[in-house]
Length: 318
Image (cartoon, rainbow, N blue to C red; front, side):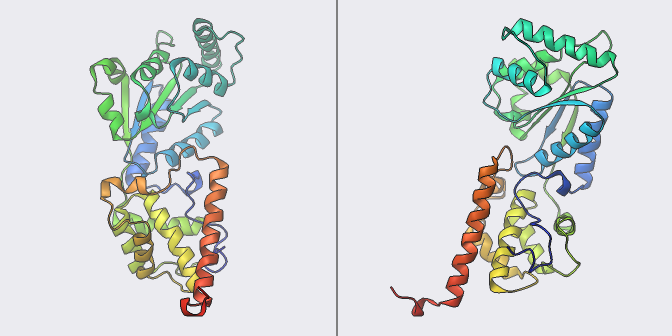
């Protein structure tokens, strides 16, 4: 759509958590290093938390790419509505473990044997649970029980719990104290500083094939940061729609007033910083159909704006 106009190969600000676009701030590097260290050293339970929209799922996808390259067996849970039995069935299926019985005891025995076989062969196994703040206490307790699958010296299953800050509050409950005590590493993501926002936008443009020509003015990026409060998901939202508007107006680089118009369209000038991430589309678990719908809506907006530009209101029939 606007890519050719700005000298890009692809859209740099898509809402899906593409690991190619992970921007490594100091905080993100520290979190990624903590996750890899914990897995390599079989630490058992690792906690990853961060505010909505700060890149947790993108970070996890980068970690998954690395784990697959290391031939580590992985299962990724993103449905926070599972019951205890559904969780175990899903984990078994995602690991690719065949089990004829649906009895919990039989599934656990089969999982334990499979983990032992992998351990003896020198392999590692990782379970990643995203959006864990929405899991019930009973399901979280069921996840804790999976860490009982161990040898006398090593954990057979490494587990990463990822979620919003509410997850940390939930883990403070008396009912989950055993789980809390088993967490050996805590990693966090954080909003971008102004300097990091400059780097974030520049890096995404570079990956998308920018030819080096300015795409956003300096003032535009400052305006993006001001409205987004450094939340990457909202930065993406503002940048994506600012590119669309600037393309329709045939303006480049994108000026600050275009970003302000987009911020007003999405009422970001009225949304408190703590609620900004919920104003942008969620990136986790979005089906492909939703991505297509977003693209079609964007294209329709462009067409409508072009019609408005070519035919002013006074020239259109009522």
